[in-house]
Image (cartoon, rainbow, N blue to C red; front, top):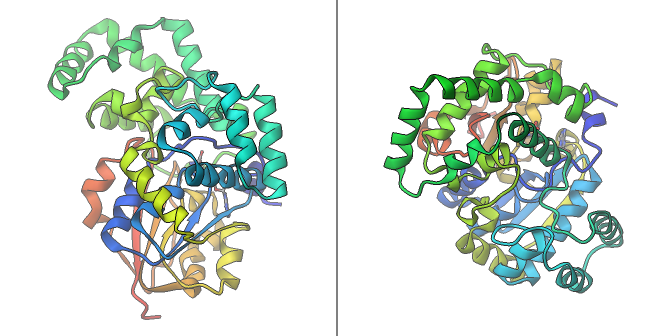
Length: 374
Ligand SMILES: C[S@@+](CC[C@H](N)C(=O)[O-])C[C@H]1O[C@@H](n2cnc3c(N)ncnc32)[C@H](O)[C@@H]1O
């Protein structure tokens, strides 16, 4: 069992640590018929239904992720938008409210035996609260926010006070020139940039081996700088999670909880658009797939590859791609080395504006187009 395989065998993700708006906008522009996506919480592939593909296959090594995604999909099919927010604990609903309704909704869901058993146990363990914070990754980030609050109080709450970009910008210009405030971001960045902490708490020694030039501290400093300059803070779920330890502002909910996107996804699911959720390694699936895909959303799975695999993974994917297919790779701390791009065109620069608008800014994102030549 590889190190990554050992790490990815729990419920690690229940919300989102990627802003899937990027992949959704790409799909809305390119209108892929067949999509292959890494599953995660489900929140990273279900919004892609808003681009009306003919079929969507979601893969994950962890059956827990697939079970949670099955319930997410069923909740999107069955529930009104507001009930969906309440079921998962998205603002304006706190996760601890409407526990009776949540039980009723859950019992109305049609789920496979495995998903029903797993999700029932998970909901019970969480006292029938909404589950957006149930993943290990989300719990770790909430833990970091608690440490920050303990060390420096509620001072960060005020960064979410703005509803005008200009007043927010004026505030940051003033605060960042203030010596007392300079100390605070440094302390916060020390916590986020502490690889040893994440490795111990979250990844149990299976953290990706960083190969980007910046140190962890500089990496997070640059990422937060980009995020703070990138629209209103209260529109950003990732910042809320990092600094408040909770989602407080509905206007910052991730893209699956955007009402217009939700309506499109629900319509597609109710029309019976087929989804397949498969427990499989990405490259093993590609090798035996009968489908041919037009869009592949790889999350940061390639960051966990090494050796021959990091060099050949795109070549291995070719067998299941249609000419023109786009592959979106998110690299977190580690960019695969020596990747053989033959047959692909690097079209990343064409989407610079979409990439700059991504809300977490912790990924180096690459977009490759398969030319179908070899
Ligand atoms: C790659 S993780 C996202 C990781 C996250 N951005 C981070 O590094 O903290 C997303 C999902 O990919 C799954 N996964 C990891 N490696 C995989 C592989 N080789 N094939 C299929 N799924 C995989 C994991 O189980 C997880 O649910």
